[in-house]
Image (tube, rainbow, N blue to C red; front, side, top):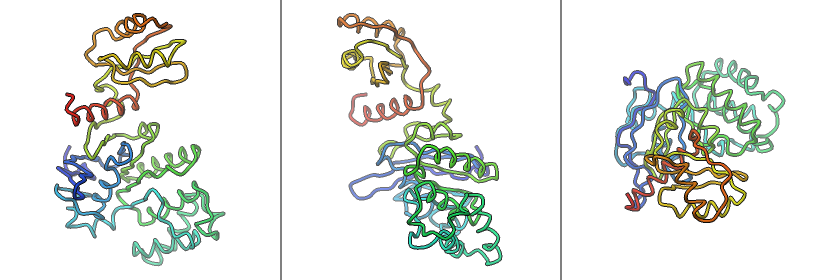
Length: 318
């Protein structure tokens, strides 16, 4: 992909906090006018990476280009062209909704005539009309989320960074929030969003999975499912706990996860007949097996397989 087609390009991005390497040799290509997801557990380096890409944190090493500008050299220019919504929304809770929006318009140095036009537009778009006078601290999680998104898009940024923006809201508000994100993409905005919700990650055009500061997988949700280094087998049994414990002792099994009375089992990718191997192990252990079928991997399966492989490499097991 050409540089002109990318909103973000990073090579060898590293951040070292003394004895802790938070981000380790990260390469990243984020296409324009797409939603790019950062998926990873807490402590995987998602927030640190976003802060470096925004120009808020200086990398230890590596090269960054954001919207064709070098970061951190051109960080002040980049800050005028991006929006950044933090996990805690970064609102002034003693100010009203209207005052928060006016303050952010001033931060972005919008001319008065522009802010007088855009603030009412934002209030209408993000359904804040009945909430203009209350203080931000009295709003619900979903209302704060809408206000924070309105505030960080007042200056019409080309690129929007969202750091776990739905962690404090209910499912209905999460769904509405994502519909708004796709509206912004249709208008030409590029969005990089970090999340630990699998259903949200599946909504992204592309995903990067981070673990302990390293990129362990990247691609579209479909590409990641097609290229997983494991097979997935659904196992039904009247004794799921016993079957799970038995399977976890088998060398070809990566992990088991119980969903109701069904087990979702990750096994070696190169295992020729995984159903037969599981059936043999279970019945050989004196346990009952009702059904055993291979299924298409989910994004959660991809995530588990990728992070387990990284752990095995780190521990010297492979």
